[in-house]
Amino acid sequence: PSIDQNPYTSRYKIEKMDILEDGAKATFSPVLPENCAGHFLHYPALPVAILMGSLINTAGEWIRQKLFENHYRVEYAKIHADKLLFSGSRFTAKAYKIDHVGSSLFFECEGINEKGEIVGRMDLQCII
Image (cartoon, rainbow, N blue to C red; front, top):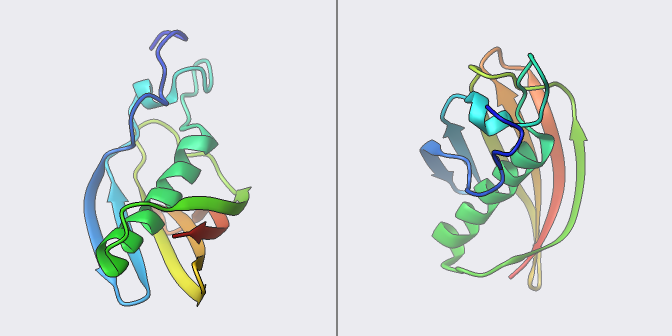
C-alpha cells in the first residue's frame, strides 16, 4: 500500500463478538497491508492506535449491549504495546469490567494474537 492510504478512516472489522456478564471478547479480521499504511516499509504492522481503538470499541460494545448506553467517552486510558501485529496475523480483544462507580466504568483490556500472546494492554475508564 502507498503511504497516502489512511488506515484510520474506518473501524477495524469485527468477525465475532461475545458479550459476557462482565466483559466482551471480539475476534477481528486478519490484518491486511492496507491496515498498516506507513507502518513499516517492507514489514507492515498494525498501528498501535488501531489496536488500542479496537480494545476501546470492544469495551464500548459491552456498554451498548449490557447497559443500553449508546454514548460514552473515554476519560482515561493507560496503554502498553507488548508486540507488533504484522500483516496476515489475527487478534482478539478482551475487555473486562472491573468496577462501576457512578457514571464511571473501569475496564482492563488486552489484545491477544493467534499464538495466545498479549500484544497490547489497556486500563480504561469510560464515562456514560
